Length: 430
RNA sequence: UCCUCGGUAGCUCAAAGGAAGAGCAUCUGACUGUUAAUCAGGUGGUUGCAGGUUCGAGUCCUGCCCGAGGAGCCA
Image (cartoon, rainbow, N blue to C red):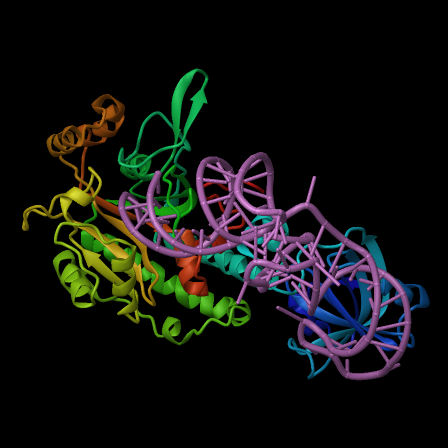
């Protein structure tokens, strides 16, 4: 008898199969037992009766707890009453383990309880759908970059110094020396980029900021491409193409999951590059018109970013941010004083920034000035400055926040549901 | 770090300062097409912690702990 996955069940209509999984839920009505079986790829309803099911298996069903692990053998049957179009007539059940009452019930739960049980919560339907979309998004982004000739070269997690200097870092004892946990692969990317031309890294960024918002984690994952001999325009085009490709691929391959999430995909399916662009000044003006006051020169706060992102139906870009609110390595815009060759890509429907990037300063003198101006330790950046001493070239890139793009595409409100095990202020369990 | 709200059964929540309750889960029973099944019954409590006010505190006061929403910071 074939062991099949529920996602492939339609190919086995009329055949006897074996499903290896867990009890998602069960119901009964007189002499009939309904068993919802999940196997990680989907959920199918098994129907057991005294007529079709062995005596031992049938009587055992009443003792099964939710999430008991079972191997079910039965006949795949097309049935219009099923949400997936197929059911399983249960012949026999083998119980692998069945012991404790499962704490998560089909009724509602609070956030704290669910996060304390995150290791179990990920078995639930909505979490299952979100994390499957996450996996698809990561695959899509990497495919896109590989197709464009980018090489994946990982950046280190242990670093000797602050990458951007601006944010609070986690520190660790590194054989008696103080080390910091990476907050971005950016600087190392610039080194590999000069060695390989087009590169990207994908890994966790760790930030000890005491942020307590729906769009922040202390550990978040970024895909960061970097290109040599490239300008702002090249980075923007790459970002647009990547987001467009990713959205359409998720729509094509993860329709089932988006349905589970009840995601309205109308806006997503109409997305096409190029995306609207506005310069920083224009964005500030627009935010003020929308009723969230802010001054020229300030960065967008959460309320500002939200109203702006709510006013768009498509992803869009803000370009040419002021020097003062961007990292030291951003290239100055020589045509407008105080501005940089930078861009953010924001998701619509109020989601906001998912990508930040731009051109990097490649003149060693300018870079040193920026480092001094921000009181960063020059010594720590010696290797980085070397990149400008030996064959420096214009280069550009960006970072894509995986959890944020997952939140947007899934239509999930809080970013904590977009990663298997979220790390947040005051939360490190499980 | 700041502001606001909250902490009562395993879970989600009620309870004018006057006898701690409901729904779900669990247990017992009924039901041959249920979809968060339904119906009947049962079990289940140191009301976050420590003090205080009061004849009497889940409820009021003080301190602490924990959580949520938001701000700032940021991707």
